[in-house]
Image (tube, rainbow, N blue to C red; front, side, top):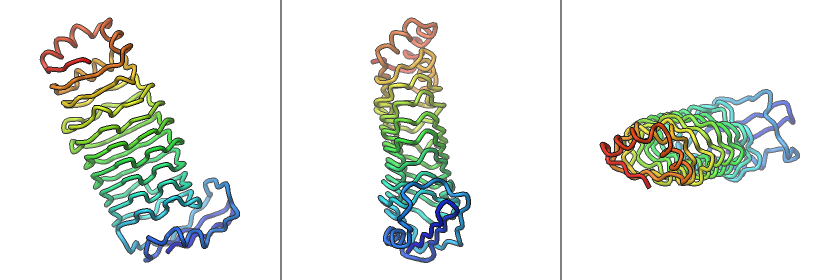
Length: 276
């Protein structure tokens, strides 16, 4: 059960104490002042000690119009957060550390969140976690145990700043950035154990700069992304090999006319990389 007491534009108090999380929405709607329709970040947040009764807070704030801000409360012991904030009015999530969470499926999907930082050392699956967050511009995720990022950033069309720290546990990267139409740059990523990534950048129409993928050995497509010749070179240089690399037509033409082309052809033969 949850009590949410709002003093307009001064402070917000959130109590979640040894209650069954599955009836959270009912209590928020019961105790919320309802008269406030447009909320900004409150200058002070009062949160008492929290004792979670369950390690599963699935759908706790699902489609809730009143939850706007989650402060740095203790999520220790929580392992599952499926659809926890899905389709809610969440804008700010300052908790950051989710030490025991193993699954984040649709957790922040279709919220109003603008920036997000997550430290999720135990998480294995982050699927559609922040998908369809059309206000999201910046995200940082530290996830050394993550293996599945299917549609993680699906249709986040304003996302421009991405920092990912994923270990060599990563296996499924398919459609991770699908529909991220504003994304232009991506730093070096470890793909040494990734087995599915062909559609990772589907409809990423602004992506031009990539540092590469360490150990890439699975088919990957940039048919929507006009990579620079240097980025194409980086992909080939960092890859392990034995895969097909699909390029955007303009990107391919520019690369073939660049200073990198002849050397890259030699590298591709050595690594058994095919261009499509």
